[in-house]
Image (cartoon, rainbow over all chains, first blue to last red; front, top):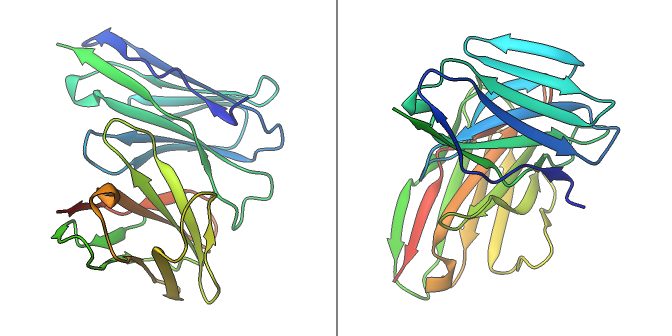
Length: 113
Length: 117
């Protein structure tokens, strides 16, 4: 079982719709969770961090965390063509600190104008 | 967010030469930096974890004598690709973690695209 799993996609949504990106993780003790956006040919960019169960909203983005189900998701409201990118889910292990963050393989999102 | 600067952004070199890539945390101190490699349309692959003042920890399958990592200060880590060959052509990305706290987020440099002729 992979430590962090994401559907590779592509996930296609029409402009203006809500895009829902999902991620599951295997380490029950994981402490914090991140979503990164990576445009083709560019490096990843942090867009959301979350560590408590529930929802965290930032503009059009909402991160949702359910530690009991070991599930984290990212909702993008009013999707725009500029949101088309690969979204990486990342998990900070138990203890955090100097340990490496584990990344999923990413979900490619396509927003259709 | 925190800023990580990576240089050079692009480099073209001849086979057999060595190339150095620098990664700097500009507005925070980073005890730990990470180096990744990414081939076209593939996932990030962690190459090594760089700890300030100590030897880097390499992932399985990554040749430590070929990919030399030095983390001499809390704001600078370097990756040297020694005796580069065409198969080393890739997108190399560094990331850094702020030791001051937060949730342990990683901040990425802009990446360095290496082409070995």
